[in-house]
Image 1: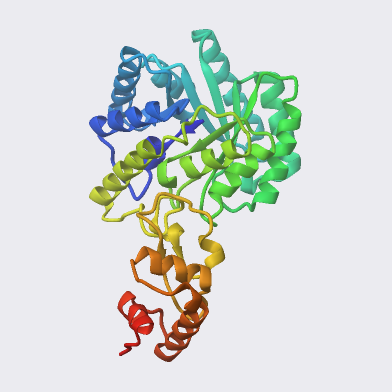
Image 2: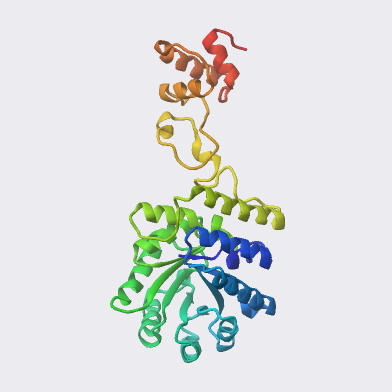
Length: 364
């Protein structure tokens, strides 16, 4: 699992992350079992190269299991900037289309051969842009060249524009994973959230055969972000996929997400961790219909119930018990009827005081 909170985070509303902040982030990532942290983009500026070098040295010194990666274009000079820092995970991106296919692949060949000549230990990932805007025939042709000729370590298929629904993304990734059978190349999924499906698409990509996933804390990233680290990991582990990610370490995950949220708010004025955040937000533990409140989920600050015309006996009972309101269980059906009637009259959910008043015979 590749955590791109740092590199994609630098593209969230132009947010900047200092060396100190990145060190804190990779500490969380290591504690949570992330495999690779994509932590800088050296071609952008000398400072990115310096920070990548620092992060790599820190992880080695501290004996981290997690590896640090740098991202660059499919150019020899970009690859050199990354390798000069001592980092062995070189992530490259290239936009291939029918108009530039020959020149594009010539460039990619030269870069990959250059990396291999310089470092036998290099782990090369190539991102082909853009899965949502490439037809299946050309995708197959391109993947075959990269897999068979270049023998890279990871071929990642990014839905950079974030336009694919899960079924179409599944089909394209499945087609490519069929090509890598009996090959050493792994396939990766990187999904953007422009249509609100990045997390679901990432899971679909794994179901289609991708074995490398690129996600971030709170889905932070370019434009509307990418797949969410925790939600993807939890979903996959509960389906039986083997991951190093420690999704059971909820407290550390919440601390990680709160730290990322704090950085976002400090630098952009926008909170990402809010009431409606999946799993970590309070909304997952708020209920109106009793059947929805039968299975506790998430880390919200306790369950919260709203009694209106749609409530039933099960939910009313839980509300009364939670709010320490004494009631006769034999009169529960009558209490529910009164709650529904008063809710209709007021056109809203009832307060604790109003519910208690119904039981003791006092209403306003």
